[in-house]
Length: 483
Image (cartoon, rainbow, N blue to C red; front, side, top):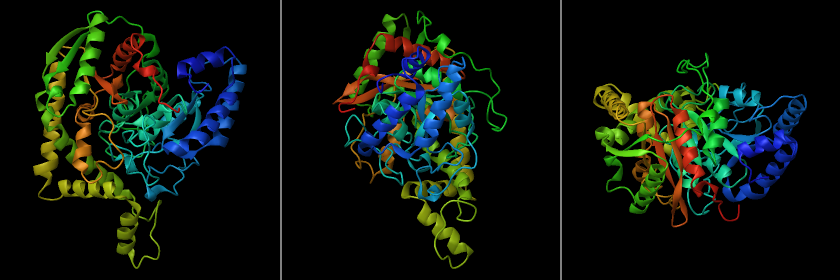
């Protein structure tokens, strides 16, 4: 059962080949057996899962149907779940039980999805390797000595190891697409505003976006269908009709215009990954796509702009964690200032502290114009580059990451080296565009992803291209040894 995709589970449940309760028990046992190797879960929710599974079976017995009804999933541990620990991978929130469900959690529960647990993540979603979690690093199932990518590395590792068919993630600078690439999954970052951020604990509010991680584009379409939609509780949610993503999967790629930016193939890209990207381009050309070279001239400024904007927003968002209202509080504070200093100093890890300080500096008097304002201007230039490109092409294709996964701890002493792994993904967040990563091959036994970007609200186009590619390749079917 653990090898079934979401789509196969939906068909199996509809055909009464197994019940949701049976499937849930199998996967909970598998998580208990295998997750100690991976550390992909922070919390398991066995009682909730079995209750939801029984309820889903009862709904099916009463004639209800739906692709997510009875399907097991997990949530990245920054989506608030009522009465269940929502830690954000941090000591600061180790004892926090959310008093309500995030909109994403509530929508998927209403659709009948079964929540198996909350997955491990970089602390407050800050990281590219899933090594900054208070609960320890997540391991890549393709090689347990390597990182799975971050910050949604727990969700990615769990799905890649067949502990469950799909999971939610969030993407602030590539945190769905990058771990998807490093673990041989399909991961989708929707258009900013497509999925509600209400109840999703914020890192950088103008960049964060929730989305699905699964093994296939077909499964991502199913999960995104349950997640997407307008939410009046979220002021950044956009009131745009949600199309039937599954219905668009089988469209022809004949005449599809694919743009390949020349800036993607510079000195920083592993040449073996470049070869795999060119192979995927040839595969799409066989399906009728037309490829042309384009330019994104301001891409070179993306990383410095992102690492001013994101920490600036983080320093503001994380100011609420002060040891007073909720979360971690230091012992025996001498006075209020001591309470603030020690609660934050002890509650936040080194990477979070680093970004808070960078952000506070960028926003401080005398530096706002020099750093934050300038970064926002660069952000607009990057968006303009994409708008010009999409006048010529339908999608943009390139590598998801410049390198395959690296060894655990290899970049801990050099944060900038880890930041550079986001070079191809952060532009989509700065511009608010939808992006998808899909499996494209292997380098030294480690997975590689190809990234697709599309105009606003064209998630269906991305899923269509990825699905057609996956019908003609088998990279996405490969399973890590031992899982």
